[in-house]
Amino acid sequence: MIAQHFYTRDRRGIFSKTPGYDTVAKSANLQDEFIINTLQDLCFYEAPVSLAGEEDLSKYPKALFCVNTEDGSMVIGESAFAGRDYTGERNRYFTHNYIIPEEEKDDYIKNPERIIYSEGFIHNYDINEGRVIPEVREIKQSKSLNYTSSIEEMYSKASINEEIFTNIIKASFHAAQYGKKIYVVLDCEKNYIEYISREILRYLYRVLPFPVRRRIGFITYMKVPKNKNFINIIFLCKGSIKRINTELKAGYIFDIPGKEFYIDGIDSAKHPFIDFVINNIGNEAVLNDFFNKVDNHKIEESLNLCEYDDIFGGNNRNSIADKKTAKIGIKDEKEQYNNFKENDNMHGNKFVKIMKFFIDKIKIKFKNY
Image (cartoon, rainbow, N blue to C red; front, side, top):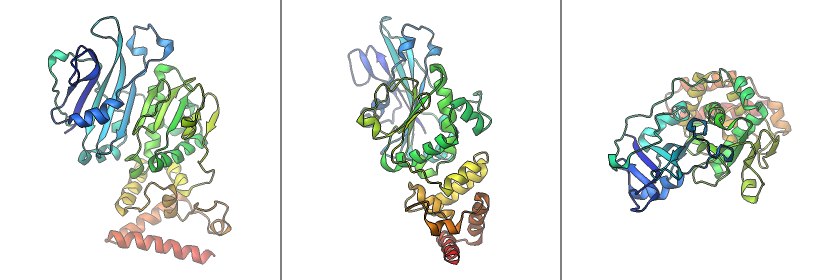
């Protein structure tokens, strides 16, 4: 079952008897220590300056976020501007969290649209209703959102191209492996940012292996960059980054409207794995079948992009210009995938499957030397 957690400004809360921000309700089985040390740090929101005084709550961008915590659970939450508090004088925000236990979260990992298009978040709660709220069986998923029909349409609406998207894929591997932050500044209206960011995430998660998905987190809107635990991919509005400081430089910055990209550490090499996923991005069945098989084989360095290149006979560990690698050449990605699939079907034992597949690849390499 999935626990719930509400956080806002009110007369009192569960952990504080005085007015202010606090947890105001939670599911019974949710541990206080987890709430204080993990959940409450994820409960934050700052409204765009340009909307100061605006009373129409629908004009404020909502911040959907998803993180994978140290205890193995997943948190899917949403923070939203909620208007006046109980005094009628001060503004407040409201955060509603769903906490998915480790034994249930892989269903969301393998079906990321259940995360990206989750809904059913509330933005107000009467503390007189009590401190305990029920657990739920599942998180509702939006059925009415106007999805982009293709990755090309997403590129157009997000004002990006394949090169930028490819670099975001590479950066995501580094986020999973090293905890890097990825700041994506979008060129769109503030109340449109949650739509564009979800569309980018929809295609991004589709091409990321399950181990990477299990390590990274995102948020669809921040007013200004903040360093929050477990949140790696951060979407920002135009003009949100005023100054590039050391902390920001430690991550990757994709400033789309400013056409400025700070991506030191991301290689410019072509990766067979990325070619494969981009070429099959419209075919989720092929990608899911591939990722499930690879996940079952338990790749040793499952957060390393080059490990996935090796499946397709590529090796970018030293240099993409390596002459021997160039002689081998990279076959059509679909053919490579089919070869992988055929090898998988030939052998019942998982260890034999993966060993034979890589031995065949090594034999092919020696023939070409």
